[in-house]
Image (cartoon, rainbow, N blue to C red; front, side):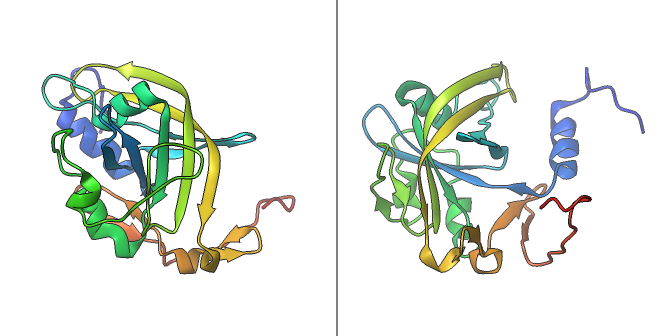
Length: 205
C-alpha cells in the first residue's frame, strides 16, 4: 500500500506512526505550573539529542479539537525547566494514571500516589520512586504545528543527573536491574528483557 499523508485521516496516520516507530522510550516529565503546583506526564515521543553537552528532548502533542497546549509544554515554555524521570516496570501503573487528561489544578503526583522529591539544580520536583532523573533547563522549543494533533519539540540541557547506586556498573547502566519499559501502539508496552549484542564493524561500541 502506498499512502500520501496529505489528506489521509489523522487518526489513521497516528496508528501507522505509533505502530511503526517502536519501541519508544518513555520520558516521564515533571514541570511546575504558574502556581507552583507540580505537573507530571509521560511522553513516548522522547529521546537523547546529544551528549556534549548532554541534551534531551520530548515532544508534547496538542490537545483535542482546538490544538491547545498541554501543561508540560506551557510550563516548560514559561519556566524553562523540566525533569525527566525514567519509568520502570514497577512504576507502569502510576505512569499510566498520570497520562490522564486532567485540568492544571490536578497534582498528578498525588493522583498516582507518588512521592515528590526536591531536585538539586532546577525547581520542578522529581519522582522519588524513579531510579533515574535528568534535571534539565530548556534551550530550544520548536513549534512544529499548533493545530489539532500538532506538536512541539522541547529540548533541554541536562544540568544534573541522579542514578540509583544499584543500577551502576562502573559508568554503565545495568539494564537488567533497571527494568525499563517502552511504548508500542495502542495500549501496548514492552519490557526490555530480550537483548542481543551486535558489535559495530571496526570495533565501535
